[in-house]
Amino acid sequence: MEFIRADIVARAKKLAGFDVYFNTGTDEHGSKVYEKAKQSGDGDPGLRRPECGQVQRDLSALGVMPEANFVRTTDPHHIMRAQEILEDRRQEWFIYKKDYSIKYCVAVSSRRPTRNW
Image 1 (cartoon, one colour):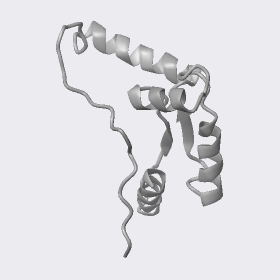
Image 2 (tube, one colour; image 1 turned 120 degrees about the horizontal axis):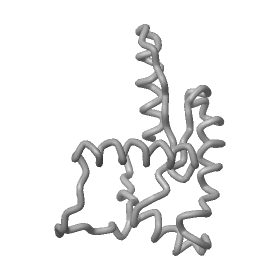
Image 3 (spheres, one colour; image 1 turned 60 degrees about the vertical axis):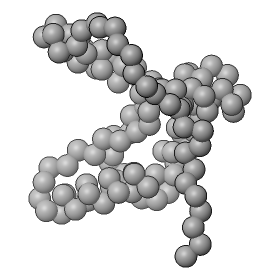
Image 4 (tube, one colour; image 1 turned 90 degrees about the horizontal axis):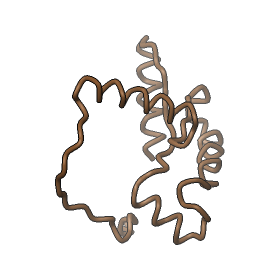
């Protein structure tokens, strides 16, 4: 649904005359992704993500902004650019090392309850 909503906003802005660069993709990092990959027997949970190809095929079938730039967080160009940006921020002291504690919980299920309307 988030891809469709983003597509609607991008198309509306384009129709209103804005120069639109529609950048979308998948996030292949984090605890939830890691746990899901482990449960599905997906080998090395950060490296083998076949459903990304399925997401791209689904977007194409739905007609979601064909000119959209689809990025996977494991794409080499994404990794390189993210590292450049983070290094720039680190040099400007926007990013620094610090010990801290935080509460974090990986949800048991992201499925919402079904409603009968």
